[in-house]
Image (cartoon, rainbow, N blue to C red):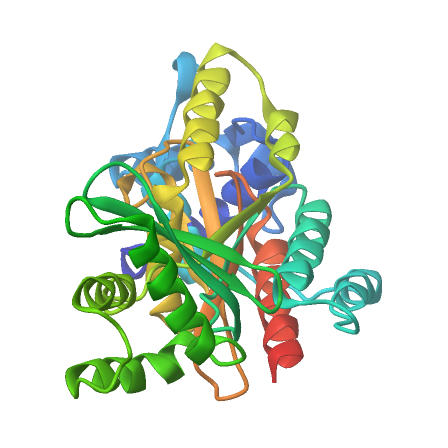
Length: 344
């Protein structure tokens, strides 16, 4: 699409979109004529705007003389015409101060950094924390209704995880106690992934000092961690910033839907998980993305790495489509780099 625009059209289009990202308002040919470096008449600019509109890059709201960029127009601007800026020293120092890791676990670090990013970007921030394979402090089986039990894992860094498992019907409490004692004697102080293979091999070789029912409970408990790894925890901060751009009932409805999605979190975890599998900044604009269905919003996401240069999580911001992309893209990118540095 960009190759279909000549130099004049590109300059007018770029100026219009930059104005929209700053004010959120439509801009007309006379205002553009005053702001352009070259001397073009309003009539000439109107012809260019009409051409851009015919290409699906602009539209006229409420029959006004001004134009606004469409979602496709915003995407074209971000992908081909955006001039990405750099962070100033104050912004860098603010983010760097939140990445001091002394005395902090990963969850606390991500909480601090995401709050700082939200404040600087004036957007809501989202970060997906990697699933940790921490050393275990305690494991316990809790019988529920017939045929089901709860497996409770407590790690040495204080994380608690619960999972439901299917167990044989009519098991006495003593069976769950036996399974709990057996696993605690072998798992505590080590990670589940490190110990699981050895425990299952011991059971398979009939070397485990367990009765047959307790063996079934242990196998069920270990089995729920044998499937695909679960997604990490989603941390959301700064939702109140999204209220700063409310202009009407349509905006309120959009935010109501967005807050619902943030509350249920599943769609955003899937979206961030997709970003984890891609290198570099990912930009989701408007409603035309299959994973991002809230019209009028954009998300900028960057992955971060561990010490082995493996992508383990992602951090980003969400806000109105008229984000200051040139400022926020490097801000998200630098934040992801700081997290990666803290994990190395």
